[in-house]
Image (cartoon, rainbow, N blue to C red; front, side, top):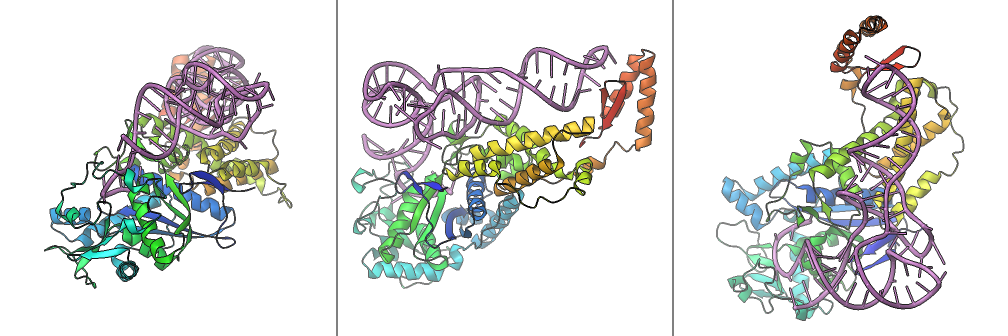
Length: 487
RNA sequence: GGCGGCAUAGCCAAGUGGUAAGGCCGGGGUCUGCAAAACCCCUAUCCCCAGUUCGAGUCUGGGUGCCGCCUCCA
């Protein structure tokens, strides 16, 4: 079976071949640390986290690097507004980033280079570009000359003639800085220091790096001239990734990345979630209301390249879906099942698992996690059913060995998708503070009342127990079973 | 204006030319004094039109609608 991946560069699905056998190098454009992450960032992080996990599960040794942009106007503005330093602001939000990601169960990257720690590499790259005639200094700034790079536009599928300066309405074409450029699409590699701004020494005078150059420098420094995957949000295709290609490939003459992968945007009310529109919801706000794994499920149920609408209804649906998966994942922890496993001889030669095959076939097709999830749900539903039958009726028609194998399969596949389920001990142990004997006594009292057709009293006792989290089940034959919230 | 993408049941959503995965919601049934829990079952011809084909959600052309990008963006 072959892993097939949609490559933005070629606009096609291509069979995946790593550069070095068994090894994959990935670089993901991270965040500018001037605020808390919103769900859009969350989606990006979750999607590439799972891609990484999947590749590892497929047997690759993955090297994963993600940057923090910690030199930027927006960070500076925030620092000014708060009367602190750029460094203080970025430190704060980097810390918040890690907290959010830990909760979402996003595995840490192997390295998190920052712009401030990559200045030597950045300056070297700017110098190399200047030497090769791709960059020109202007009043302490240094600009990249897009006309020098013949392939400019190959990633985003644009030609310079097609580009319309200022079409996004974000930049004043009459901006004084624009006047320094030879071409409106030239972009800054290095910006001369302005009074009161943090600055670093350079051959072009004190200043700070432009945005695009840090990623080129980080990839070169940490991973090499050509990597396997370069990832990021779809809004980075142009100009950010286009410019990275221009910078890196002008110097090395080699492809920066073999596969360019982009995830779709999160939308709110039909529009892209973004800081500038003010329609964003931070991850921590969402997690105050929803289970992190429900958020993960919400993200992974959509094809990663398509837009994903954020609505309370969708999150609620994901929350319910997660309950099912969680129950399946916790199947092996139910003592009634677990105990009987002890005697079961280990499966010496597990047969080729068709469930795993189906999962792999689905996900191999351009990371179709939604398709893979269908397999997880199939197993989880089965286990949920079996667990209920065991709890309610005491026996199952499925062999213990089979159940265990399915549970292990579910745990394995859920792990690939980054789902984490922990038994909720607090709920499990709470029988409303009552001892088993006390509960049994109440049930007997209720049985007596019911025998006398005093259903009002019987229902009162049932409601009382229910309010303590104990559910009663009247089985045929007048037998009443009970269980706490968590079985 | 340019480039690109998307349109599948009430909602979310998968789908590699051969008669539509999965999730959520909802409905029906079994059981029950009534419930609860549990179990079982049910819910689409794929935006419109025209082609290619023995056969199209799946390819081609046209249309309509929505979205993203065009130097802040995940």
